[in-house]
Length: 89
Image 1 (spheres, helix red, strand yellow):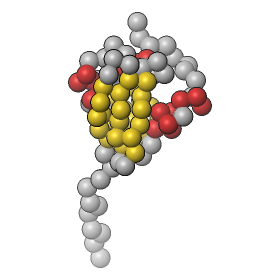
Image 2 (image 1 turned 180 degrees about the vertical axis):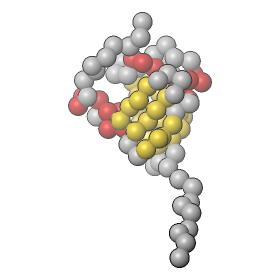
Image 3 (image 1 turned 90 degrees about the vertical axis):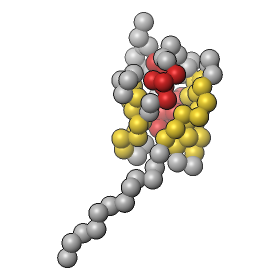
Image 4 (image 1 turned 90 degrees about the horizontal axis):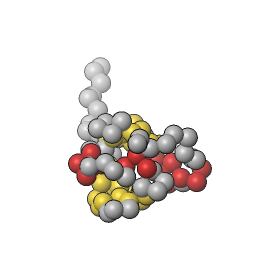
């Protein structure tokens, strides 16, 4: 018996709004708020680089052009994940 190929992954992530202070992500059916104050790596990034986000595995987001990896939980509950690194520059 042969296994059937897996279907296309329906989980997706999309940046829906960017302001001078923050941006919004839609992850599946959930909307997430990303504040530049809490996530300074995005503050001076070009819009196109913020919009290029990937979901390499459930619960993990990656911005390849910015080399930023974030756990989805750190966006949901930033108070549980104090900053260890400082933004570039």
